[in-house]
Length: 148
Image (cartoon, rainbow, N blue to C red; front, side, top):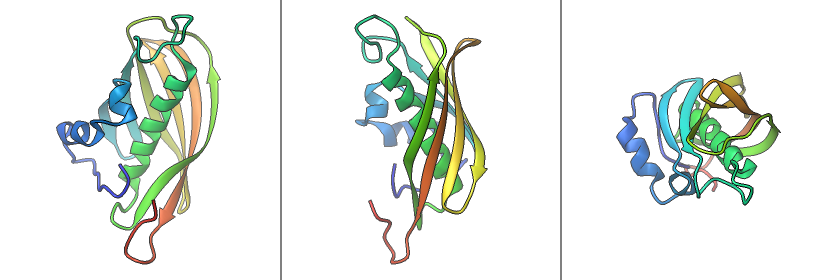
């Protein structure tokens, strides 16, 4: 999603097209709602996202959190002259899931010039599964191309 301009008016179908062939697509993550400062996505709890103990893998949960927070930062930056990169996560897994879907809800906590901080809560229905804080670094382009 780097160097791609996404706005709150971008149709969900276009977002899905951008995500094809990525980890997000392979894990079955689907962005369902987004606005400036808030992003919601779902992820299946299935053979792609479980660990050998047949419960949701913490790494898949973290991938969901990075997806919604990264997408959220994309909505807040100038996509022509800036990009964002996840630089830090703090995760607490509270409960487990064995089937169905989980939903990740990212909410902006801090929108600075060089960092964005997001709180991501992952739920299965109303049950809290994980709480993740994500820090994204905002990289400004000074020469006409954003570094990758």
